[in-house]
Image (cartoon, rainbow, N blue to C red; front, side, top):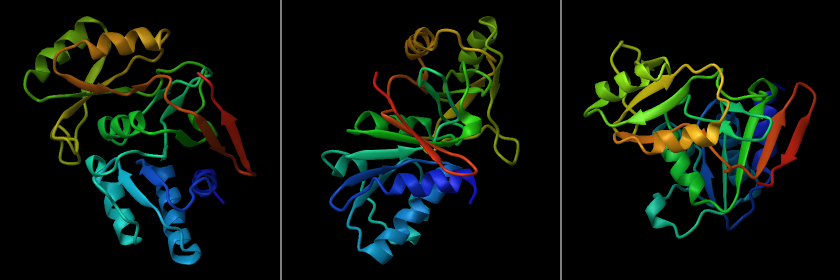
Length: 225
């Protein structure tokens, strides 16, 4: 079994009937959602879910998973999502799948957050993975110039046809190729103050548990911020 599938299946076991679950986005989450669908069919698991992307919604609906709008639920018991990088102090970069805004909204309103990854996502220091910044299209070129002046090495994320990618929320993504982020909390604060930035991909002090899939087994890390 590949490590991503191993982590996804393990995470799905934390779900029990009666829960409201946040379903993340990404290649590892795909396996978790498949396992949730199996448990609904074979174990009569009774849950309702909110999703962080149209892609996950489509997959979940095909599996018979009950999907609710975020504003139609009064709480989220648990959200399970992936991560693009996790540092040694358990801060994360997310947004490689362009769903960072919805992922952070769902995570913020969750009682517990589990991240599921393979070992390659563990790093000493964040930054090798480009940091996604979700921005409104209006004025986005001015933000791009600001990031250039700061030497953040920005690039607009493009879709398959070479046009600027639009997120599910209708925004652009500027990826910052920083290589190393020595002070992620300070950078997160700076980015949050910029007019036109809708959200950034630094997930600070959010995760409660990390499930790491390996070739042989899984590792579970309990995080206390």
